[in-house]
Length: 74
Image 1 (tube, rainbow, N blue to C red):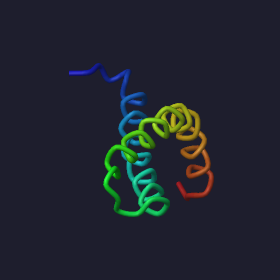
Image 2 (cartoon, one colour):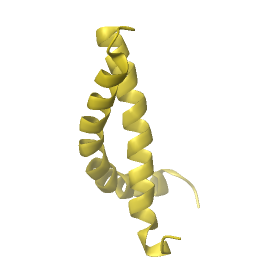
Image 3 (cartoon, helix red, strand yellow):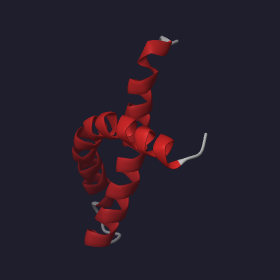
């Protein structure tokens, strides 16, 4: 098992991976349509997107949590 102290990093890794997979798939499909090389194009787009998404999530998640805390009642 992974130690609890790594939970925020693991959360960011999984969230950024799933979201970049979804968005890159939709974008690739929109740009290229269902074509012969779709899976390869999608995989390349996803890996590039994930390289940017992972650090972005690590920065954005704490900011989003603070915003939600301020906008919700306690």
